[in-house]
Length: 96
Image 1 (cartoon, rainbow, N blue to C red):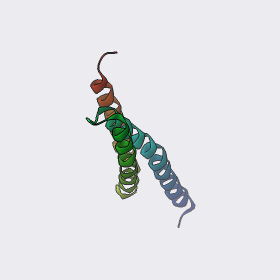
Image 2: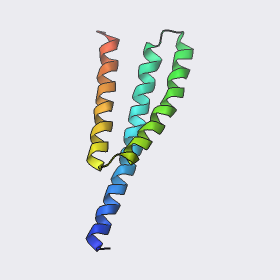
Image 3: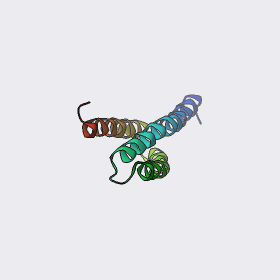
């Protein structure tokens, strides 16, 4: 294995780990906030439900990041979904 190819592979794996950790955290927290704020039950149950779903969202995000073909596609998908969740939550809150 060429030394440059080795560093190239290490860079992609490190980038995927960072995308999975940071992007998964942001996506799961944005999903928990969205579910917790806009579920139509009492506040305590909706917050607990949002936090339970955040574990599932985090797991799916990590699996998706390591299953995609390229690192750039994984980054674009996670970043795009985080932006979408943020604006969807912002839109549903309405004017304050």
